[in-house]
Image (tube, rainbow, N blue to C red; front, side):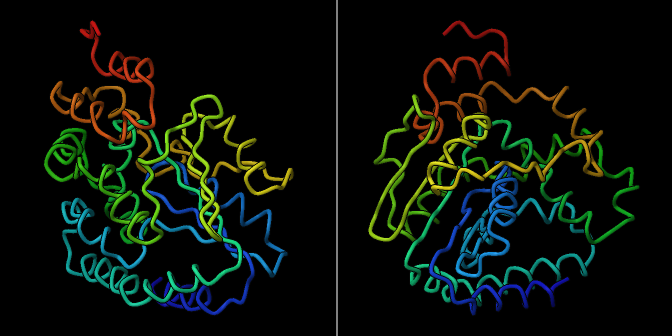
Length: 283
């Protein structure tokens, strides 16, 4: 696995292209769908490269992926995790330089309703570890109660606010909170030198397809869903968790009063999210 990942990283750094599309976003927001759709669209175009990144250099992942270790109960799993992170650290700066050297840079970032994103992120470790261990898939160790405990104990609930500063601003100089969300067109678009930037919301999937077509000036773009939850090996547990789990009032308020939520979602939308997670909302 890791040999192929190293080879892929070197290939991405060596490709001579004029245009690069970077699907660059925090995890669990449906970004794989957009990345796969772009790759299929430009598969035969040697002048275009498509990258799918959650962090550049591994720093953000190093700081905010601690919930992995809740499940990494063997030394082999931990070694694999550290190797993956070291690869990112080694090639991150060079990758960033290569991206910035391109004539045309298109960055697409996606956001998602924060509590749903957190619930999905809580299962990220299972998705990763499932590739390594068939034993884990059949283990009774992974239960609803364990996942609930992980949600409160291991998940970093400040991650979504910090990602934009740690990644987007530090690496590309874009402070997303300086640009209001366009609720009519359901996006943020920014032009900065050779960088064309688009931010969309997962909840606006139908509109997103049209927005992306206009953004890349290609009417052939079509979303290809590549991240269907019901096909994942832990889908039954994930469905149970979504059905049963109600986050604490305190945590719900923390998420829905955050800078992230208030910037990308309207007051009416936030109230609808509140009512989804608890029914005593009188706002």
